[in-house]
Length: 293
Image (cartoon, rainbow, N blue to C red; front, side):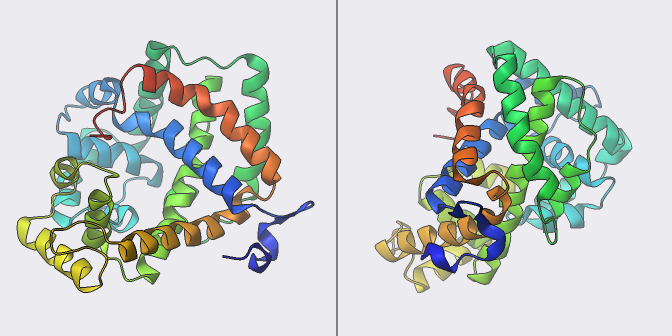
């Protein structure tokens, strides 16, 4: 990948975005967002609506920004869930309308961050907002469904939760871009999940339990990846598979370079460092142990 082939939209006053800076800030954003899917506060808020199953809870909270969409729309936006998993949210808007799910999500985020002791001093919180706000405001949302939906959500009054919501926009923007790259590389919904788990990025049992691909579908996806030479006959990622995964990540980074161009390389790296206390607090609390196997 040559930086000099980045589009003009991915260039700053100091030149093109450094893809290493894009990767670093993307990882920081993803890590700072992730806790919402793992903390008990999320399940507790969903239980207030009478929804106690993990699948519909996840789908409803993440879909809420889009409004009362059908499960088919959620399936399209989330990509790697099976249709049977997405159907589980068919009645969630009867339990509570999307705006109440969104408010409950903010409450869960606030409660969880308070519980684990997330703390950003006022100056750092203000600086982080000064960096992420222009990124969100200047972003091109064409084809970025979940990012656009989250960007349209009114920010909550709690400063740390408002920052977290802006982080969510950036996280979903990269996710939306990543789906385009996956499709362009011929990696379907189940295929990309099998490759992801084979690479050790998500425990297989957790992926199967939440995405609900059946044995036949999982085996067929594995066979396709073996035929491409990306997995060996034992389901282990090959050198070619590792190279393909990295190429897909680099292609996604190239898409995301334009997102971070308004604050440049230094701003992106600074933002990553400013939001690191969120991840550190939840790591210390053991929140991410399940997804790390």
